[in-house]
Length: 260
Image (cartoon, rainbow, N blue to C red; front, side, top):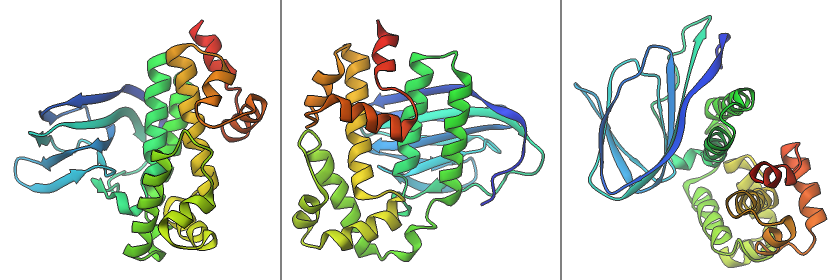
């Protein structure tokens, strides 16, 4: 799918995380609004007045360009992330898929969606940054699945289990060889299939998850970098600061200053 040429820059309408025991709603927005949601826990059933699209589950992305009202329903506990942007394009923008499945490699989209929600919540006037993150997310959505098409379902399952292991051990100094050993495959093979499926190396994925958690601790609990870093297995806060600058092109200590 090709990213359209924008006549006006995308502007955030809302960005939030919703946790609920059930959810029943019609999604109706003005023409030109694009809403992107990620299911984190549970599921939702998606339909229109005339058609049922199916069930969207954990890790899936729901992308609604609001051509028609969309119905979402679930009677189970679920968590989803959602953001909506409005814009005007110089050409038709109708190729975007309604549902992108997790096995096509959605983790980068979810990470960017989390970041949009974080920035919009803490710094609501920073519209330039949310727009930049949205364009990155849209690019990931357009390319989603291209890198994973060369991987078999078995390889994608290895990557899914690798991520589960990483999340379970994220407060430890977890390494690629630990993950590969847990899965019973070689580190080299894990590296190859992870990159094809996710678009990132195993090491970068581990570091980004840790750095995001460190930053969130600093923001939500207003604690110093060394203390937050230590909780995620980092012994050198200077290394954490340099790594964050390399990945995100800003200083991690910026976030704690914003909270004081």
